[in-house]
Image 1 (cartoon, rainbow, N blue to C red):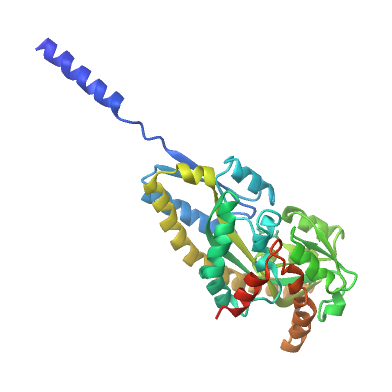
Image 2 (image 1 turned 180 degrees about the vertical axis):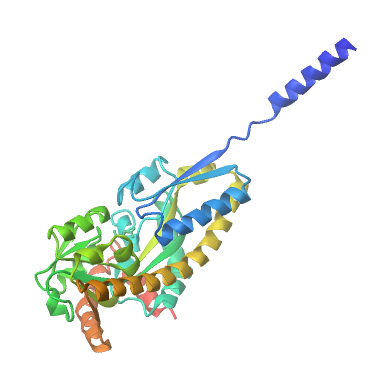
Length: 333
Ligand code: SIN
């Protein structure tokens, strides 16, 4: 009897030792924006979905407000797998995948629906392939929305008003050319320094979406806001290829499924927040009288379009964006 007990215990022990220990995997996400921004909210949903679907085998940690990496520094970290996922804006890929600057070209897209068709179609696939070649896995394109112009210098009604004003830009050759086309001075600056740059007058103005202008409180330190919808700001959700390649098949499928659902939600949320946060900026302007909002007419917007869209041919080289890609985006129905 005693011998039988010992044998059973030994069998149990060897069975336990033989069972591979399933190590819980942690995926760390670095985010530029605060958690209250729609991107943060959406990543929280993504986290919950993945953790539930993987029954906790894949744990997700989100680090918001650039607390881990600022601007394009995150791309180096992703390459090294020091962080596993991020959603940098397209401009941040500047030197690595210059073709993504397609989305920076002013007035290139008819509206947000056509832009989504570009992202979800052949052009988007081609861009994801270029990103993969550089050692990142492009999961999906996420929206912020269209950008507006703000300044504490002259109100920006026609392109001539921008002349001589200093505008903060992200690190993008397209954005540099866009402001130079109207005789303005573009200054590259990290997102986290824009508020103080505007407050201290280091720069006169900036371009951003209404939701970034609201969440980063840029409206507090600007006198004029012009509704131009001249350019687009979006993000490429990317994963470290080193991490992705080692991820078991079932966890890859949990991530892919949650990402598809999160993308649909993200697009809705981005639109809703840009609308609702514009209403809050308008309320602030009315209440304080410290900000003038200029809703430009179609004719005025057309003047901006004429002035800045002439930069497209500068980016026809394949080392930049490429003529084919630009023309394919324009031709997308
Ligand atoms: C972001 O939305 O992640 C930053 C945009 C910017 O740098 O203006």
